[in-house]
Image 1: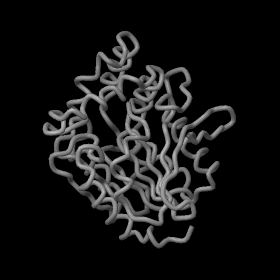
Image 2: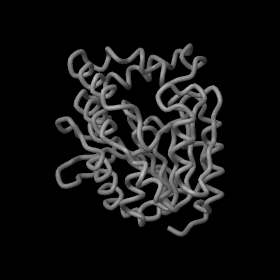
Image 3: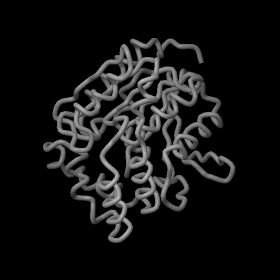
Length: 266
């Protein structure tokens, strides 16, 4: 277990692969911890430094009182990467992680040399929707939301497997503070203008059965960046790295290689 103490705020993270290799950083979705990437990382190219972490209020990272601002979540990622001495990373962000990645790429060009916006967008949903979810989680607990979340997270075929129960358990074991706090951060975020100003390699990934960030929403965001590319994973939901890990790894590996990241200097 690796814990970074960032001025008294403790962040749980994990590093796989070559500790001296070019860094690839993963940021998770709402309601998940760093195990989100367990199936994908073993399928990716060797020789890279794969870094993943639990965001505020999730997994083994400290929870603080809600609500959270997106700027706070971006600063958490920034502080962790500075703590680890990371520069010129390829940043893979899924859902709220994709929003964190957009904000970090705008704020710290030295940290992010290429960006994957996976199942995410510059703006997701409307404030009233997020407020309803915050109130429900705070009043009734995350378990009250779990069945609906599972339908958005996964394609139909995956929802029929025994593995679904483990992901439902992961969701409901997150802290209410962390879940509701991150809902508030998403609610208050509109990155259309700053993301349109990005000039770096960008890949958008969407799942054809994603009930949270449909493919057209993901494509609309990545199209803001000139020269970006887009990949659709058929049969996948909001977490294609879980229900279609081989396809996800192929798309991500191609991007890693095409951007020259696998051969980049550390």
